[in-house]
Amino acid sequence: MASQSSTLVIGSTGLVGSFILSTLLSRSSSSSSPSASSSSSGSSPVYTISRRPPKPAGANLTTILDPDLTSWPSKLTSISPAPTTVYSALGTTRAAAGGIQNQWKVDHDANVELAKAAKSAGVKNFVFISSAGTRGVLAGRAPYSQMKNGVEDTITSLGFEGAAIILKPGFILGQREQVRWAEEKGQGVVRALGRWVGLGWQDNFGQEAEVIARAAVKAGRMAEEGKVPGGKKVWVIEGGEIVKLGRDEWKDRPLLAGTPSGPVPPFPLRMSGPVIAGFGRGSKELGIPTANIPVDTSSPSSASSTPDQWLNSTPSGVYFGYASLKLPADHPDRNISNSSSSKWEVYPMVMSIGYNPFYKNTVRSAEVHILRRFSADFYGSQMRLLITGYIREEKDYEGLDALIRDIEFDCEVARRSLEREGWRAEKVDAGGWLLQEEEDDGEGEGNGKGNIEGGKL
Ligand SMILES: Cc1cc2nc3c(=O)[nH]c(=O)nc-3n(C[C@H](O)[C@H](O)[C@H](O)COP(=O)(O)O)c2cc1C
Image (cartoon, rainbow, N blue to C red):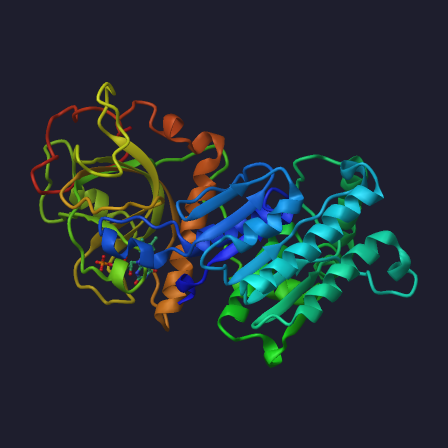
């Protein structure tokens, strides 16, 4: 499994680089666990070197901050063990750099030195985000092309043990942090033309930044698995191939679930109960630990709830929302100060309700994957779930890898969906149930059963 590999992202605060980072974080980690021993098996270390902290976050992310670009190569070689794959989307614009010479230092010199450092450190694969159209007779003379070509030539000649991968996308669409007027115009034109002449045209000239990032990560993964087409040591990826790797290969699943403004009825739904052991496959086989919560469909577990109705009328499937945990006082991940009024901590989560068709379970289960990593288990702790929305139906799969890929994608959908304003925990849990010290009716927690309530908030 790719979990043994580690990666470094350079340029992680830029448009494509930040997508590369979030893609890597969503595919390699988002581990949560009631079973700490195996939580590490699902998480591959991801490093960044940057001037400012990158936006995407993850428990397996180590950020190295250094304002001095020229010291980044030594920072790279000090990472131990050396990353398996380095992604560089490092680049700036002439205007932002304050002239072509300064841009050259970033786009060319820094990339060249980093590639050399990577090779000397034993990095196996180097993925470089370059640019389309730098090799034409005329274009090749432009300073911008020369910068990119210089880096490409260096990477090609270094002879990486795995592969040197060069992506040459056209326009990069998306919202840059710094909105640049000219580029905005360019994007508008590309989008408009794309709509007008059909997506095929747009695919070739203006791949979305996210598609580029996914293509880069997909290509990097293929190199790690020894699956570069034709066993090439230098793999140049352009136009339609970027789209194929970055869009088609990722199945076209939407990255967001639910309406933009927030949950709609019957959501949010509530469940609560103690964390119990499942079959233990989540940690061992999937590298995606799950905290199970009792699903008692046989009898209502509190006077006010009607689990039969709730659960029977709720389709099996994958859901997302928030989990709050009351960890024991000596738990290493407890982040509560003694003075805190609530002993509950809230985390984003993704969960499945159903029979796990891949494993052909005969009983219905509710399994929660909390989107943060724990260093010790928390079986027996009380857990509350605020289920805010539905992602997809449960499926059977040809193999374990496909199940893992889909769950990792679910994690990304949950994370992104919950980041939206109307989905924040404070908004969807306006009554503060997740943090409330005790249940209103005092029932349902600590009795070994699960509680399920629907449409009551
Ligand atoms: C977000 C998420 C999505 C899941 N989707 C599926 C699915 O589509 N099909 C399936 O058979 N199991 C699915 N599962 C369930 C896993 O197979 C299950 O967590 C795993 O078997 C571990 O169960 P265990 O802890 O009882 O061993 C999903 C689990 C999670 C957390």
